[in-house]
Structure formats: structure tokens, C-alpha cells
Image (cartoon, rainbow, N blue to C red; front, side, top):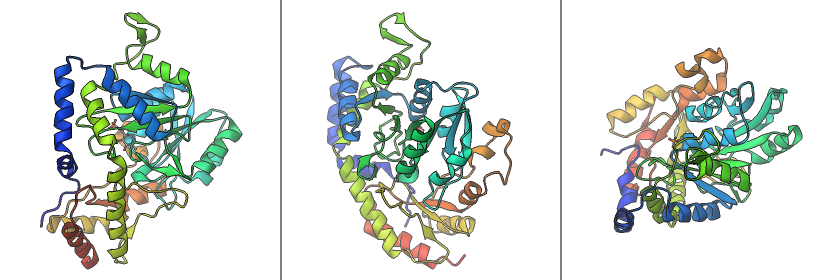
Length: 365
Ligand SMILES: *Cc1c(COP(=O)(O)O)cnc(C)c1O
């Protein structure tokens, strides 16, 4: 049996007619950028997240870049971020001239919030909480530290649409939430897309200007902006999907529960979920000391698998200039050598899951 690591068509097929209807509606409207669909989506998504405002953007990376610009990150400022974050998280900081200060992850594969305080210097301006793989960081400790030192809290929710921390939706806990609608994400568009959510109207107004050449009134430019607009077609299609996101998340929870119950192999440790958070299982991640052998084994059985992520940001060529080396962040480096994402997507069948489980349980290293 051949099983892909991810199969987006399964989810698409469930509501294919509704997407086609909406796409035709937008295409035949004659209006394609910044119109009614984006406006409605922003309202609906802000409502879903429980944030005061939402601004639709072109990507998750743009959301991060704009969020750090809104809070005034510039050359010389430091931002705390987990050492096992996705590279885009770090780019959002450095594109504004800021310096990432890495804190190692804990046993839940997200930032160890108890180690943040020791990294704070007079240059520290913000903490980026990356809710990796679908579960929340310890937002209580993060917000407490931020409050004590007067720091802003930015949330990277690109993998956690619908995740809650102590009942509150991520993206509404910190000052600004950053979302990606890249097709594989929990709320995935049919192309690129992103958004930020925020509490302050001024932040939302400024983000709206930044995404449109720094202009609120056409041809009057208040600042040097970007072109980072969510388009009408993507916004319309996201509105269709948003109606089903809780269903999609619940289904992935069931899939994960079935894996959790049935994967039994001393060489494989599934991801643990932090008490206080739920998990929308953006990925089903396992740790294995024999990860590379496991990849070969799964490949031989035609079971798709992906490493999220093989090179921690501090060891990437892009961030050589920060001067880190192998051994700088041993936990992140160990995780990069241990983690593997196995097939997890809406519409995976029990038969497919059983095949994956049997393979994992028969793996001898
Ligand atoms: C996908 C992702 C991003 C970047 O989003 P794009 O829309 O691809 O730019 C940022 N952070 C995390 C954690 C992500 O998973």
C-alpha cells in the first residue's frame, strides 16, 4: 500500500462543489483584490480566533515580518524564539534588523518557557511564541515574563489554527498572532495566504497600510509599505473552509488518538501534548533515536514521511552570520536528528492508518 505523508485532495473532495461555486462567484464578480471576500473573511476569522482585528496578508512570513515591524523591532533589538522553530519565524525577526535569541525547547517540542528569563537583556523587546506542530506554548509563563520585563508577545500560529491555551484561542493571547494559510496548514488556501490578528485597532490600521504600499487612501502613501494582500479568490475559498475547521481538527484528533493508542515500539516516542493546551495535530510527530533507519524502513514500505525540520535555524547557511555552530543548541540539534512526521491528514482511512501502525510496530532499528 502506498501512503503519502500528506494528501490534500482528500480534504478538498469533501466540499469540492462548494469551492467550485465560490470560485466561480469570485471570478465572475470582476473584483479580485481587497474586496468583500477579504473583508468578510477578516471579520469571520477574527471572530473565530476571538481577536479584535484580523488583517489578511499574502503569507505567514509576511504576517511575521509585519508583526515585528508593528511593535517597532529594528537593528539592535533582540527577540526571544525557540531554537527548534521553523526558519520563517526567525526571518520575520531578522528582516526587520532584529537579532534572534534562541531558547531551547522542552519535552513538548516548544519553547521551554522556564528558560526565557535568563536570556533577557536590556536589548530584549519581544518573545515569539511558536505553537509548533499544533499545540500551544506555555502562554501563562510567557505572558508573565513578558509582563515583568515590559516585552511584547507575538504568537506564530501558522501550525495551530484552532489551538487553545487554557481555553483561549491562540492568536488572541499575545499582542499579535501570525497565521499562514499555505495549503498544508490547518486552514489551508489553494495557494499562498496569511493573516495577522491583534488587539489594537492602531496595529490593524497600520498593517492594512503596510500591506498596500503604505497607503490607506489610494495614491496617498504614509509609509514605505509592501504588497502583501490576501486575494479575493483565496479569501473566498478560506471562508468556505473556515466553516469546517472544527470538524477537520476533530477528525485529526481522532486520527492522532488512534496512533497514540496503537503505536507501541520502544524505538518510537510520539509527541506529548502540554497540559493546558489542546492539539490540532498539524503534524503527527514522533521521536526516534534510530530516525534515519526508520526513514529507510518506511520508504521501503512506501509510507510517506517528512522531517520537520532537519536543520535548526542556527545551523542554516542563512544564519551563519550569527556565529553559532554545532553544539550551540544541543536539544534543538538532537530533535532535528530524532523527529519524523508520519502520514496525518483529513481523510486518511483506518486501513491506511493500520498499515502505518503495523509498520511502525515492526520496526527493529
Ligand atoms: C508555514 C509556517 C510559516 C510561514 O508561512 P508561509 O505562509 O509559508 O510564509 C511560519 N511559521 C511557521 C511555524 C510555519 O509553519
